[in-house]
Structure formats: structure tokens, C-alpha cells
Image (cartoon, rainbow, N blue to C red; front, side, top):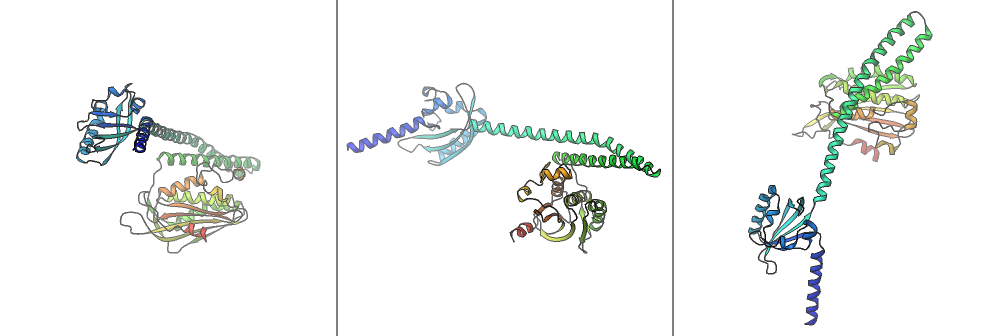
Length: 403
């Protein structure tokens, strides 16, 4: 008997210690919402003495916007004994006038002989909610700052591009005159001016494009166009750059490819970026442009079959290390800074290409091995639907890597 009393006393002391040192607030209410028990944590959490709460309705401390929902849940608890009902969030006024935010569980134990009340077990989440709000505000401010940055870059690029185009135009006119009169020294200087101006204009255009993409100002202009004609234009444009490093370009265009519906200008830009990189980082090597068709399933409503066009650019250049591939398509990131210093560039070309492909409902992938070369693939739907198409083709590249 003495042993049983001792164990009972120890159990009561243990329970009391847990309640007194707990971080949650426990209230026991009668059927009318009048509090007849509050845990000692009341003072630490809300700053009230027990006699300020006992015998009073707890609803008078609840924020007016939360009273209706809490009262409705309390009434529901009265009808469902011994069921744990979660309270997602409600506010209670602190003794200093501020508001604390709680999450709680409501349990009807009116029929329990030792409790005889409705138990509200509340946990203070004020700091967490404030942190979440601060993070949300910070994210909103960061987005606003990013939009402001993009707008600034777009405006600045536009202001720089206009006078630079004039400089390039006048250098062309003077170059023609110098060549006409046989002034080789002046012609050589003018060629350098024009080359430098054209390079700077390319950089400015890249900055303008990435700022438009980031700010959501880039738009698609969809129309039917011939793949063969587009590839012919791309090859004509890139051929001098290919030849500049002593490379050869081979084009393999599947015969049955013809008209697709999309944005020809943006596809041309993406292909030129890939071919320009291939030519830049390949010396006395081979570059191959292959265009083929693939059947795949879209994620669109109906799940019908869709035709996909695959544009592959393969080179025998220096290749890219595996650890650099993960950041290859990030803006202002270059695979190897030391090599990029030799070949110049901003590191925007691949970032722009990827975002253009995604706008058209496609994607761009890469495989590379140092000393062997790189292979880039653009996957685009044969019919681009307002830039919102979804690609769901087989992950060929993953399979190739695992072989």
C-alpha cells in the first residue's frame, strides 16, 4: 500500500513538473467556454496571472476576426467527444496589448471524470509566422529589385545600341571609301573599329535579351516556316566563324522535315549561339548540325501524340568538365574562366538559348567530355502553342550517359 502511494505521488509530481515547465498553453473550458483551468505557462506565454483568466470566457481574448471560426469549432467539439480537432491558426491578445499567434488542438473531455472540460492545447507560433512573413517580404523585395535591374539593363542597352549602330554604319561607309581608293592602312584600322563595334553590339544585344527574359517582356511571334530554309540561313551566317578556326561544318537534315509552326527568329538565335560556341572552342576540328524528328507524348489535355524536332550540334572541341555542366546554363556563367578570357564572351549565350527553348515549350540538353567534344540538343514541338507547350519526350540523354 505504501509503495503504491509512493508511486502515485511520484507520478503526480512528474506530471506537475511537465505541466509547469511545458512550452505549450493548456486551457480547460466548460461547455460555455468559461476557463476553469490554465497551465502555469500562461504567465510566460501571455503575461496573465491565473486569476485574470480563471472563471472568464477565453473568447474575450481572441482576435475579433478569429472568434467566429473558433466558436464554430468549439461547438463542433461539444458534439464530438474525445475527437482531436486541429485549429490551424488563431490570435490571442497578450497582456501588453500585442497579439500572439497560436496553433492548437481542441478535445472534448467533458465526459472524462478527471478533466470534465474541453481542452485547448495551444502552441505559440508567433515567431515562426513573423519569420515566414519576413521571408515573404524579402522575396517580394528581391523580385522587385530584379525587375528594376532588368528594366535598367533594357533601357541602358537600348541607349547604347542606338549610337553604336551609327558608329558601325559610318565605319562601313568609310571602309568602302578606303578600299575604293586603295588606302590599306586606313582600311585595316576601320576593320578593327567595325569588328570591335560589332562585338560590343553583340554583347549589348545579349544583355538586352536576358533582361527581357528575366522581366517577362520577351514575346513569341509564331508562324509557319521551313526548317530547311532556316538551316540554310543559319549556316550562311555562321560559316565565316566556322572557317575562322579552320573547322569544317557538316549538315544532316532529314528529308521528310518541312514546315513547323514556331518562332523562327528565336530558334535561329538559339542555333547560332550553339554553333558559335562550337566554332569558338574547336580548333581545326569538325562540327555537325543534325536535324531530325521524334514522336513523343505531350502533357497537354487529351494526351495526344505530338511531333518533336531535335536540333543537334556536335563538335570535336575542348569539351566541358563534368563539374561545370550543372552551372552551364546560368546567366553570366562560363565553363572555364581562363579559357573564356581567350575567346571572350559574357556567358549569356547558353542561358538565353535555354530560356528561349523553354518559352517555345522545349528544352536544351548537353553531353560533354573533356578533350573529346560536346553535343548540345534542342528539343522543340513541331507546333508551338503560345509558348506554353510541355515537353515529355523520352530522356535519351540520360540513357546515353548510363550506357
